[in-house]
Image 1 (cartoon, rainbow, N blue to C red):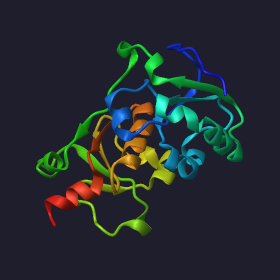
Image 2 (image 1 turned 30 degrees about the vertical axis):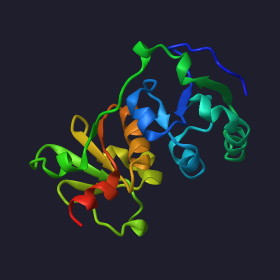
Image 3 (image 1 turned 180 degrees about the horizontal axis):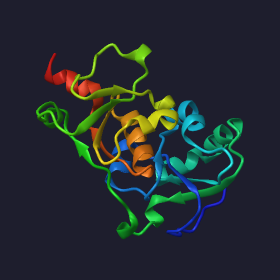
Length: 193
């Protein structure tokens, strides 16, 4: 797989494979965060197979390139442009992703926002807080995101934060204002055992 030189205007679907915390701290505008463990399950639902893809990695993931390339190919993503190391991107070109602690979210007054639970209904054993709640599983988000109100803050929630970060990255690319609830339902439940 080709190591790409950074170009701010490259016409790729940027797939940031780094951890949720690394992504939240700084990522390319429009990048979708899919960690290797979630990639196989959700890539087919969130990516366009016929558009060129470029991966964003940190040095620790570079040794996983052959496996990542096999996963892409097995899912029909044949237009792989290459990969970019995040260290090659000027700090000024990175964006951060807004987050909120579970405690701060729980203490928010009712208002003009949506709580988006991206867990699949079959896996919900710990119910999410009900204020302004919508459930759209991550694998269905690309087909149902327009049910969300543009211009409204969307708080994303999952079990631990990985899928909430993927959902937030997808929504940001569509012009929404997502905020990730740090630690997901594990953190929310810890406040109300």
